[in-house]
Length: 248
Image (tube, rainbow, N blue to C red; front, side):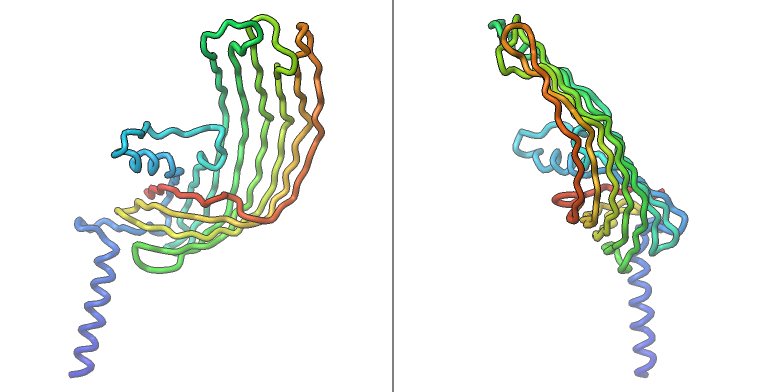
């Protein structure tokens, strides 16, 4: 009798666990071997829905100048517990700004800013757990290439002495390898939200740039900036990354 009761309890627990892994119509909730996924930064959406009630919300925006906000993460499930991953960030864009209608001599008339940066990464992550909430860990190798940032300002008449006419930063190059640690919650069949931290080592270098300053008489002086390099150990994504993930 005791063995029968234990067998029934085991069967019930197994059935319950299985039910948790499928939706009401029988669709698998967790990704399966061979599935692919695309993950995008969730912060713009969370900010939008979080401000719905206070009247200050604006449509989700993806700022190309924020390198961490626009990373796309693609994964391929090797099996139910292991995934290969690739990270891509293409930060390309320009901003043109027209100032208020102030025609005072020397006042700023308009400005432009342009920049581009490409970041690529590849790695692997391993899952722990069996329910809708699963922890994971792994690693990423990263490489980044930047073409430098350029900004220019136009003034009404002659620019005042000390006004910045143009600023250029040199191109950049970076390498890094990071350990990752995160949690992923599957709230719908093959749809999830994840939070992730990464920690590792990185090296970066930047080329020489220049700054052009007005002298107040219609001319200018140019100051060159030096090349630089850095090596560091620490967190890679600041306060962490929150992603929406879609598996198919």
